[in-house]
Length: 276
Ligand SMILES: NC(=O)c1ccc[n+]([C@@H]2O[C@H](COP(=O)([O-])OP(=O)(O)OC[C@H]3O[C@@H](n4cnc5c(N)ncnc54)[C@H](OP(=O)(O)O)[C@@H]3O)[C@@H](O)[C@H]2O)c1
Image 1 (tube, rainbow, N blue to C red):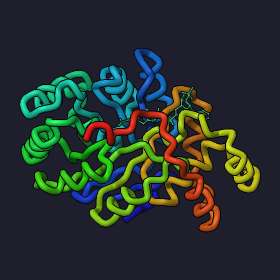
Image 2: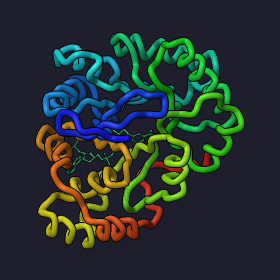
Image 3: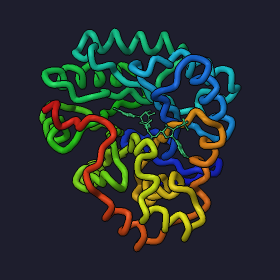
Image 4: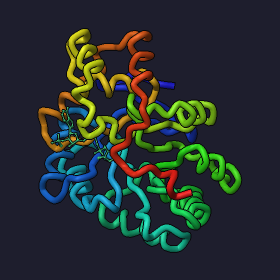
């Protein structure tokens, strides 16, 4: 179920909490740059920030949230369990460390960052504990492709609200998208812009001319049309604004299908399937 608020789309997750469908990905920004990019994003209207312990910028993101003057309840913050700390007790410790670094009242969404072999069940149980203990508003997973999702069914008591994975027209994961829709899990695309590697695709360029939009805007809108949440990264204010300006147009059904056909299993990040 989606609704429009403050010029952007929100969706209700399977545990009843609301989240913007679009947000800032905060990987590869550090120190003052991370703080400024988050402040710029919040000023533009972003209300979802995706970080992780691994990104080493939780402190700066927490600072930006406080400096922004925007009510904490209006911002959706995601962070993730670092891989080396997966396991039950270590995940609980990692969560405490994230809370300390972020220095905000609560985290909206805590994710398992990667499906680490031998650790998946214990880590998920720790997240379930945090959720049941009301220490976090929602819990989810990242990089869980079909085999990991099927396995999760065997040991989980709580359905994750989000599965964050690499996803783009060149990596159109139809099975995962269908599974997530069927199970009421919100698919969230990371590296949605392929880090710019596919911007020159001639078929994309033609769509840019047709819709009078940039490559980033066409790709991000393709996610929205699929009901996929997306978290592009930029630490440049102009590009943050460009990426945000995707709620004033739509792409035709035919062109969405055309973009679906770009799929060539292209990835910029390691394939999680190797962790099986
Ligand atoms: N769960 C996971 O395992 C996982 C893995 C990877 C990523 N993520 C999350 O997903 C987020 C996004 O993915 P990503 O950072 O890998 O890649 P991305 O969002 O596809 O691309 C980011 C790159 O594109 C540039 N860019 C942004 N907007 C642009 C625009 N409008 N025009 C031209 N270039 C533009 C950025 O540079 P500038 O900053 O200079 O604009 C940056 O170099 C991450 O930040 C992170 O939060 C999660």
